[in-house]
Image (cartoon, rainbow, N blue to C red; front, side):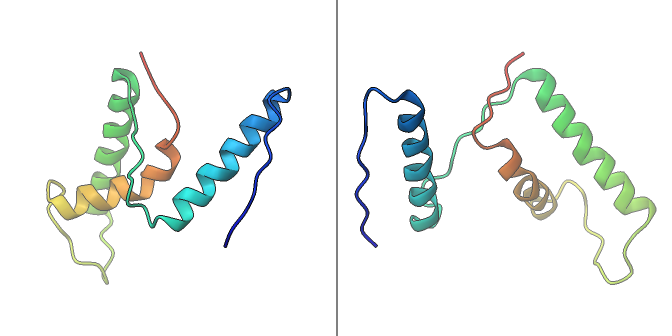
Length: 96
């Protein structure tokens, strides 16, 4: 697919929209070779870890009979949690 985007430097909103379109296309067609960066402040990191701890407690309290129970500190469990939450963190900067 080829596309031509015309930019009007007198239209700030149009420039922002063109940037969003180009970023979307880049992310969709590069198959996530370039992992986006997420920057978390102290408070948001604490809240993120609390979510993980609560999810681990819930899994331990009410285990799914079809699911294998793994150690919460395993790399697989941590990675799956981060993968589920990653999209909500991309493009957002949290500083405390």
